[in-house]
Image (cartoon, rainbow, N blue to C red; front, side):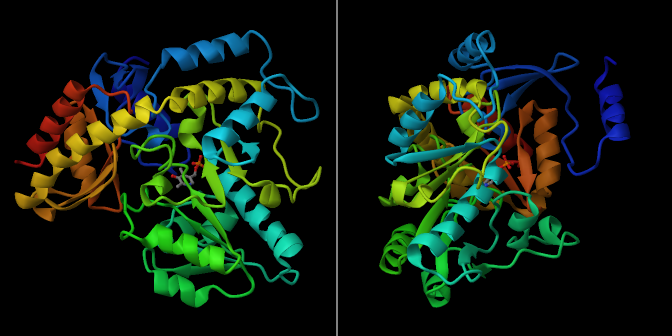
Length: 401
Ligand SMILES: *Cc1c(COP(=O)(O)O)cnc(C)c1O
C-alpha cells in the first residue's frame, strides 16, 4: 500500500465504523506538523484533542520513553517499581493535592472518580447505602463507558446502549441556580468540565465555577473537575479552574498527561477522599506502569516551570484576537475559548463543520468538526507563532474572509 486511497479503502474494509476520520493517512509527525503517506505536510491544529499539547515527537518525552524502554516497562501493581513513588509525589505536588490514583484512559479516570465519590459518600459523608447521587451538566463529555454514557445528553453517545446506570442528575451547564436546586443530602459530587471541550469549547459564565465551589463546600459535596482536555496548559494555566481561582476536591487528568506517547490518566485528590480505597477495591493492570510514569514525570517537569502555560496564554490571546473578526464579517456565528483552544461556530453560508474541515485539509491544515457547525482549533502548545498565523490564514481563506 502506498497511495492514500489504498490505505483509506483498506481501513474501511476491516474496522468498525465508530469514527468518521478525515481522509488523510499520516505516516510521520514532528512538532506541530504531520506528513501523510504521499509526503504531503499538514499543520496539526487539533493536537489529538489536547493529548499532544507538547507536540509530536517531543525530544524530552521521547528520550524519557526510550530510556525507560531499556529498563523496565511493566510490572503490574503486584510489585513496586522505581518510578512510581516519584510520579505520584510530583503529580500530587503539581496539583496541590495529596494522593494520586493512576489509570490509563480518560474514561477509566472518570470511572475512578465516580467510584471514589460514591465510596467517600458512604464512608465519610454518611449517605445511606445505594443512594449516592452525582450531579453532572448537560452536553457533557466524560468518556464512552456504559456508566458514563448513562449521563450523556448526546443521543449519538447514549442511544441503544442502555440499560443505564442510575445515580446521576443532569442540570444545564453554567446555571448555578439549577445546580443548587438538585443538590440534596444524598449528593456526593458535582462532576464538571471547567470548559466543555466536545460540546464545542463552551466556557461557562464568569463566576460559575467559583459558585459551584462555594455551593459544594457549603453542602459537603465533592467538586470533581474533569480537566482531561482543559488541563495541563491548554488554557494558559496548568488547570482551567485556575482562571476562577478555584481548587476542586479532585482533578481528573488524562490526554496530555501521557505526552502523546502512551495513555496515562489519573485522579488526584486529598487524603480524606482518595484515602477511602483499600487493596482490591479498584485498579488496573497497566495503571501507573513504569513507562507511563517515566513519560508523565517528564510531562510534569515540562509543566513545572510554567513557561509552556505562559506561551499558551500569549499565543492564545493572539489566536482569539485573530478569530474575533470572523464573527464581525459574518463567517462565524460565535467564537469561544480560552488559551490555545477555540470553538468556531461556522455560519451556515460557509458550509458545515465537516465541509470546512475537509477544505482546510485540502489546504494543509488539520482540524475537526464537532456537533455539526463547530470546528475546534487546539494546536500543540509548542506551535510557532508563524505556523499559527499560517494556519489562521488558511482558516480565513476557506471561510471566505
Ligand atoms: C477525552 C475526554 C475524556 C475521555 O478520555 P478517553 O481517554 O478518550 O477515554 C473524558 N473527559 C474529557 C473532558 C475528555 O475530553
